[in-house]
Amino acid sequence: MSMDEKRSMIDPAHGQLSIAKQCELIELPRSSYYRVPSTKTDENLALMDLIDQAYMRHPFYGRRKMVDYPARQGYCVNRKRVQRLMCQMEIS
Image 1: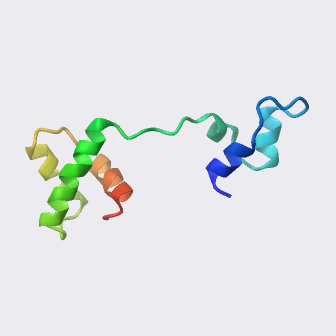
Image 2: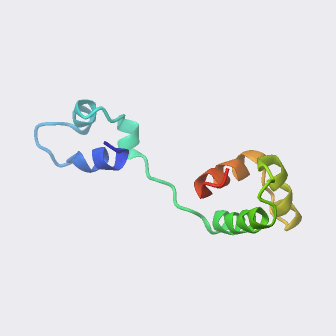
């Protein structure tokens, strides 16, 4: 089962089982139940667009080399952020 499916199974208004007990029963960490999934920010979307443009021109560039392209466009990025975005884009 995915985390979203497990999260949807929990009933916070349940009269007999607490949220902690429900999480324990379906083997979902309680912190995962309360965690709010992050949304894609406008800056990340712009960076992903730049990374995509650079990847189309130079598909052989690795993550470290890919950092240079957004940096030349005025974005302050590091290798780990570019690596995470490339993984989200499934191009690494």
